[in-house]
Image 1 (cartoon, each protein chain N blue to C red):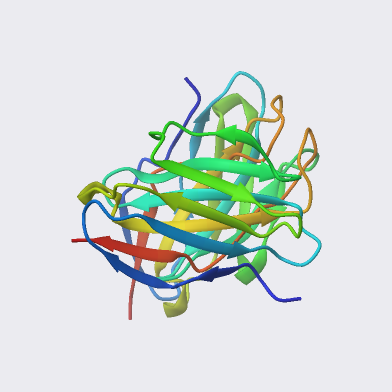
Image 2 (image 1 turned 90 degrees about the horizontal axis):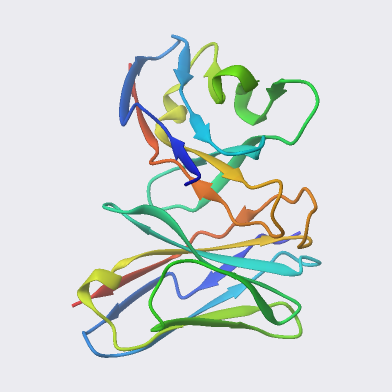
Length: 115
Length: 115
């Protein structure tokens, strides 16, 4: 079965430190890949996406992600975290071989930023 | 452009009642998807509509239904509410449907509490 795994449920990082969130997927073919962020009580905001091409993708708010086919991974990074980055982050995929936009999500990683 | 609008933002219902949630997509977007978010199950796909037709359905009981109108607005209905239906219901819209590279944009959600 197709699945998305985010191994870290919680991550605590100091303000100004770097952040890396892990995402692994299990699909037959390379899916379309997304990272979304959710602040408390809010919906999901798209940070970045990967469809094809350059494996290093830049997103909003200073985030980037790297697609590694050999590792079936799409990890999210930020060089220097701000207090406003405290939120829950979701990795999601769309099956590139199926019609439609159905997103399959990982379980999420909650990020806490220490001052 | 206005974003995805979901109404109401909060709902309190009792077991056995039914509820209807509404979603207005971004102007020009023709595909609407619904997701349920709970602490235990995470983000799960409910269904997807395009051109007033359900194109994709998740693994939910028949008590969950939806529809899409000619202006692309969508509603979802949950009949005979159960305590376990308490969740954040998220609507997402995208420009198109099919084997294309679409991005889903999310609304702020409707928080349903079943007592």
